[in-house]
Image (cartoon, rainbow, N blue to C red; front, side):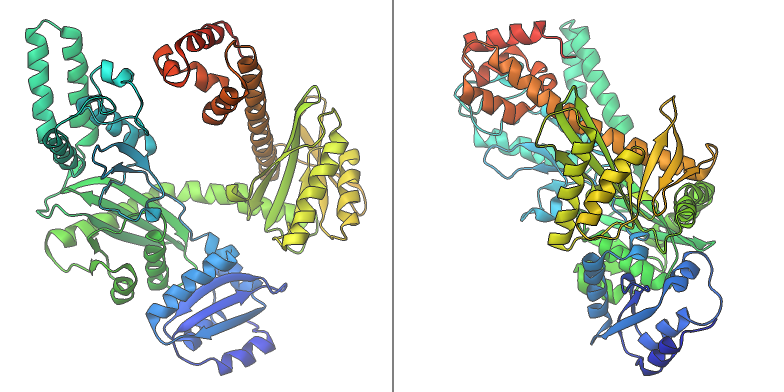
Length: 594
């Protein structure tokens, strides 16, 4: 490999000490952050020998590097994670895992309440959190099950009179009735046992209720209870593992092949595997570095750190123990060793099953993005911003912007724009949106796109060019021209204006179509949201007894007609005087929201 002279000279000066390094491209942008026990050895490895896959692509873009020497390997890992968060480098994004899980919280109030939470690391007291659950539906089903069996508090605030839950036996009416503390404490203990994986108490209770209801000839109630029992035994009783410890344990395994790394995680709670998670990523760094960083970052998000973590070989246990402050082991024998091997085998199976899908996805995203870069003769194409407009006969005028990074949608970067003037003027809308967006980019020094895509032809492109030029920004702009069937058929590029036909069977066509669909759906959903809010305001204006204050309270709480229509009369009476609640319910029943 022909190493650039200045890189070769800098490598001679790098010490063999622990630290972090940042790889930069020709624009001085940091594209990768890593750590090393010995900086000189690690940095030199990038510029000798032959690389494949994503590592080869990374090395081809490196024009310079910087490094920071630290006093320990623990410090280097902490610095690496912080630098990745700060700079969000292109190649570190490929290794990121944004998966989060819902947990169930049993509040520690005098009268407890069950709720579903995601931002668990924001909670000061994590002792009342149980999970993780595979998805919010599973967590909600569990909460509904417990709320049905145990008459807990359902309301956020205490009302002046019992609500519907009291009348159907799912609340003890804490707002107006005194309840023995012993009874509340017993419910709390039963629920905690269940959430910790012991379903025997609730199973026994439901079986007793089934017998009682059957003896009363209440067969419909008995059938509902039987369905609840089936839910517990089938859905909640997960794979049992032969481990006596009932505390929380997470098990990691991995498998590496074809320049990809597959990582598998088992969450063991109450002696059962309650959930598992896997991640497949390109292998850019040493396996030890990637695994150690992945595990440290895994718990920096909304995942509770368990009492014990079991790891395979090739992970730096000492560093992780210093950071995570929990028991971490690399088991050598017994049940725990078998669990790690099971995680390794599952990681291998996941990679084998998903590899072809991963390669196909690469062709549809990264390779299609590279093809677009070549067609437009761009130096780089890491970030694309796409715009679309929506309105209804000039009203509820909005625009949306979606962002694709390295061929994939970056949803945290999406933006909505409510247009200041309601009128049927697509050019005016585009002019306002682009000015607002890129004036803000200049003002706040935000990341600039490598390409702007507008939905339209020459007219839209000229408006976009006018705004970008007025701000003295040099950003390429293209339009997407549609045919008579409203389907994209060509790219329109500038400097000079040129129409480029696209093969509708190509990956590039599907890539552009995906971007169009994404921005269209995002904008339309925002448009509908505003319409719904506007429609709800009109409905509330038509109901006798609802003044401006009540209208604003209802708009703030329910936002849409659909959500308000779902409320029962009893629930509306909790919010409004009875006669006004009746008026509103009758109006909503007759209202047809188009």
